[in-house]
Length: 83
Ligand SMILES: [Zn+2]
Ligand SMILES: [Zn+2]
Image 1: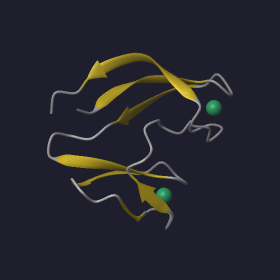
Image 2: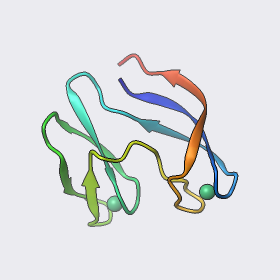
Image 3: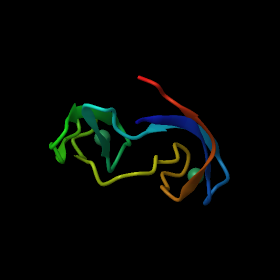
Image 4: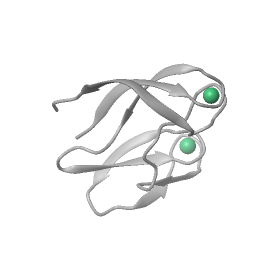
């Protein structure tokens, strides 16, 4: 199940909204470089990012801070997405 929430960056203190996690019948891939996210069929582990040409992978479980590009952050407030 995907989770939407606000995250706080441990590096720069920025607070931002992001969504993480796959859906029941779809896996989530995130781009290593630009944090673009895309739902793909379960079983697809990686692909090329259409936005920046970087690598998208299912290994990423934290969003990227839009301000300092760190993935060192923690969720402050979460809402469940019921789709
Ligand atoms: Zn990208
Ligand atoms: Zn940051």
